[in-house]
Amino acid sequence: MKTFEEKWTAWLDGQLSGRELSEFEASLPDRATAEAEKAGARKLGALLKRELGASLLTNEEFFSHQVRERIRENTAPSAEREAKGSAWWTIPRLLWTGTASLAVFLIFTILVMRDKNPAEESQYLTQILNARVDPVVSPNATVSMFEVKQDRVTVLWTEGLQSLPADYAAK
Amino acid sequence: MQTEATLAQPDVSDLDLVTRCQAGDTEAFDELVARYRTRIFGMIYNMVHSEQDAWDLAQDSFLKAWKSIKRFRGRSSFYTWIYRIVMNVTIDWLRKKQVKGGGSEFDDSIQLKEVEPASKTVPKSEALPHQMMERSEIRARIDNAIAQLSPEQRAVVLMKEIEEMQYHEIAEALGCSIGTVMSRLFYARKKLQNLLRDVYENI
Image 1 (cartoon, each protein chain N blue to C red):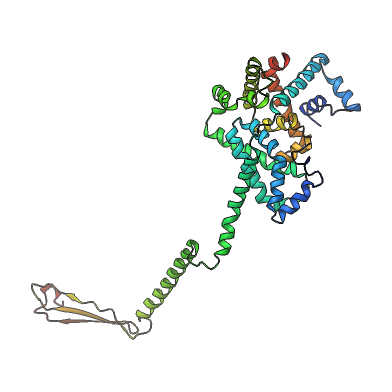
Image 2: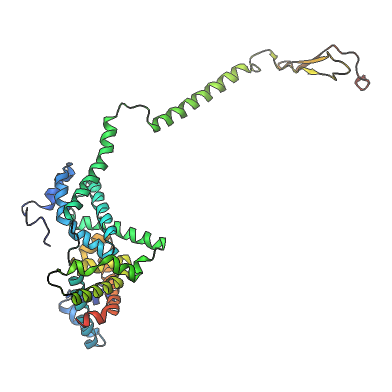
């Protein structure tokens, strides 16, 4: 015991003895007041015991019954879960299945897209730009572009042009 | 510490019942509930001052005890172990209630209506109306005084004065040191002495 509060409490509850007791009592500045406090604390204890110590639980059997019911309810769901071990379409499982399906779909899509983009494998780039020139001047004109990536050559193929615009003239 | 069922089955110890509970025997747990329900309910009631709340908290405490009974290793008595659960449940509840700012705990009129102390503590056949009223007033004063203590101080003073538990048992139940228990007891008693001096000096 180190603090005054601890020593006081022990003294009050009769837990001090021998040298500890005599030392503590000698350290009290006003022994008479301390003894009065001690007597007061004991009266307080007796009052609390008398007023608060009486039993309050009147329907004890119902209390126990309710505890039993709550334990049963608490135990039942896990037992049911075990019984329904074969039930597949639970929410967590659906969630996992959905996520896994999405992941498979994304992987598959990426692989297919890579296959459909033969830039790495094909000799010619399949990217062809079909663009119409001014539809009023040349209504049937089309422009196509071919690119040989390996040779770094791009061919611009035009068809149906009536005339080249003046600013296209070579200088 | 005399319990309800020790009179009926003195040869079956708490530890035997706990062992059976750990094997899933609900009847053994029922026996433990029967042994401690009154004291635990009374303890909680004295802390929360509401019969309904005390009922619910005692129920929750026993349910928690059942759920965690497999972790009970017998280092302390079952009584101390379950008191620890009770204290955790009750002190948490009191703290949440204070945070929510209900404040009803300190409302004298509500306490007087809810507690009806005389009907619980005085046998009706023996008490005269004026005695009942006097006891009722005293009980209300005590409840008001206890309500002014912190949850931990309430727990300590009630376990010491009502349950007559030892410092080390209280420390175990509250998960704190013996020094803390003694210090809390010091301040709780001082406060109660200041608030109830006229009551206990005039009895």
